[in-house]
Image 1 (cartoon, one colour):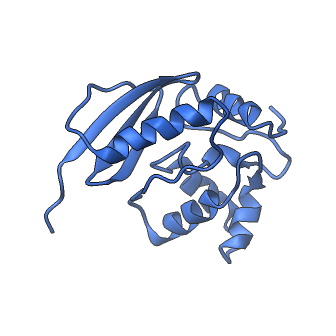
Image 2: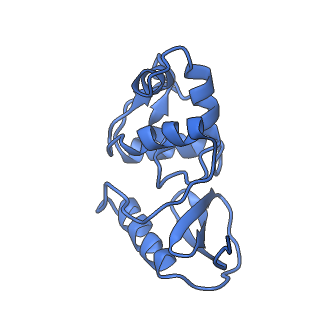
Length: 159
């Protein structure tokens, strides 16, 4: 299988720089807190940048750009479930585990959430501990970034 060339774009946001990486016409990676030199071009990058700007301006609640996340079947099932969590809503790791039919897998769900290759577009910031606490976040400035995103969406949480 021949891979299409990758394209890279960055934008500045209230949570810091965000780098988007596309393969063909799908976003394959989002890197919070990183700025990269533009490389190639893809319409999907232009659209993703528009949607992200609208999200931070309070004018967009659901991203519609196509995503191609590479991971295990378990990870993909977790990311698919996370993508269903609407703007301003939250679920716990245990609730996600139950929704994917594996209620004892909340720690494995946590690991899958932490390896989400497209944070923000697939809202892993909306997943909290069962007590409503932020248990970690790997993007940008870590927990500070997650808290900012939760505040932006008016989601209640415990620090």
